[in-house]
Length: 232
Image (tube, one colour):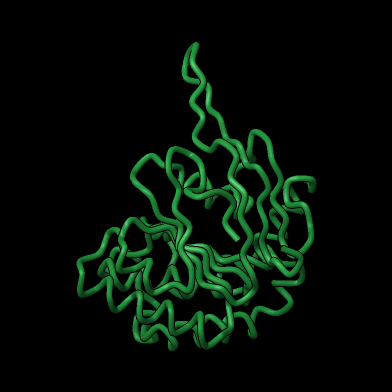
């Protein structure tokens, strides 16, 4: 797909298990256009999270190619790949991954600190963090620590953090997996509202068919391959 923002070609990911080799991904190809919302579904062990981590530049494939906006992600060095992730991608994980020693505002600010010139733009960055916290309804919690927040509040902080550097692509791994149905619905409504409002591309792993149905397209993984062939 020539107009793809994100493209994967024949991805394989294998792990050594003693004298055995475990093939988690066995030749996955897919394309995602800018502005799409795409769900990756499948049973436990199908390779969903592994695929998302590879597409986000977090885990190198055993073989195959990932390109983002025409750039080969894994042909770059680790420093260049880290810079790409920081500037162009935002991540939301099931377990929140907030740093407990930092305040809510500091957690939101964290991704920006790795960008060039961040310390010279401290005032502007703090203002953006405050704006994002207002968007997710947590302005009053800015000075709190994560352990003073509910699970739903922590996931909203994680969403604000993911948006800090104005990414083009948002990758979400079971973003409501640790939440009850009511809180999860609130987080999903916020997530999809922000994605639509900012014109972002969303790639989301979920085991929930109702959640997947909210996306414009679904990719089903089964036994390490895309069910039905390449996903485009």
